[in-house]
Length: 172
Image (tube, rainbow, N blue to C red; front, side, top):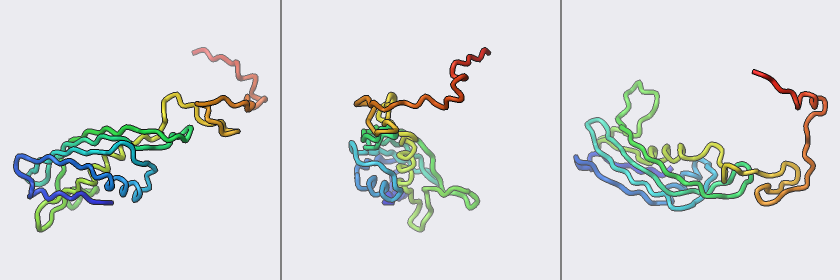
């Protein structure tokens, strides 16, 4: 994945704002992590970094959209991405189980901002992408898009041996 490395020693004490609008960063990451999305509206990340003694405070947001296939009807639609985050990142201790995006080098502290932006983007993606909440999907027999047309396929009514239970009412 393309890295967005920021040397914290180069940032003034009062902090600094950054704007990242390179779409190649996102498309490279989608390919690397095999995320099935395509470009929509440009993804633009605005980030404010305030250096601290052993890390930094990072406030940011990413806005834009991606084109993604609906899980029910397979139609491509634009999914809006809108994230906001505020995190304090510091150099990880030796016994810390998770790696930190802040690394200490001989040049000073370096922040891998790309890792933070990717994490926020991945959390903004839907688990089950739907073009709309009322999507009817595809007919399981003929494949017709039920959002656009009705199909004449005979619907199964279930196992006839269990038909007696269809009208069963249970009182609480």
